[in-house]
Image 1 (cartoon, rainbow, N blue to C red):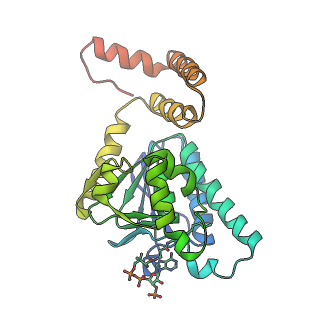
Image 2: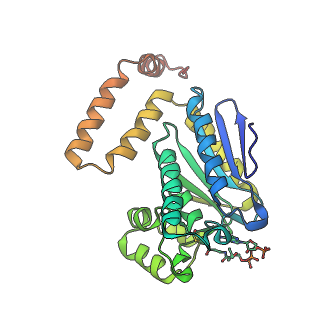
Length: 259
Ligand code: HXC
């Protein structure tokens, strides 16, 4: 699908897409071109009205994404570095605001920009060999793709601070215990488990799933009163859809819903 060099975008089933970062020789490090290609892939998925779930993973068995490409960053000027950060932040934000669930399948190292990409997914499944970390301070820089903001929101300020200032990597079990990942699976099962979850999501009302994502993503940055008011509005909006009529009729008629 399309002429990408550094990523693969494929449809695993009609409505389930998988985006693979594909630079295994450098452990799938993210350079500028890779992020540009990711943005184009997100456009393709966003424009396909039948798309229902996006999976994101890395090529090979060693690494999800080992960070931003250090060889490309080494010689950046301050303004170029700021622009690189902004390009990735905008692309990752599009994943959060994409109107379908995005599942990160972390199949190895998720370091720096890789951890930040994983955290921009709606939730993460990890392989047993996954390792998460923000080692940027060891390179003399801060996090630049959202890690200093998303990590504290996911694991709490104190744990995030520990990881961000020490660069300590955590393994899949610790990531599970800290609430960074939802499940840990053997490497060979990771894609299958991601696909199984995607199939479960696809069985539900597509509009309800999209509105649920909007509520969670947009609601977390609002105060509780406004967030709950948004929930009432979107809940009410569901009653304007055929989906609500079919879902509730199917329950009362004791048959599976046809969405
Ligand atoms: C460029 C990278 C890379 C990276 C690995 N490689 N990570 N190249 N950028 N982020 C390359 C190595 O140079 C090497 O190339 C090849 O991939 C294999 O890596 P090795 O180091 O030989 O593998 P191993 O010894 O198993 O160590 C794995 C590793 C290590 C622990 C993941 O590669 C590592 O520490 N990588 C860097 C991790 C990191 O610091 N990430 C944060 C980047 S900063 P050759 O040619 O030698 O085979 C960041 C900031 C984001 O992400 C914000 C920016 C605005």
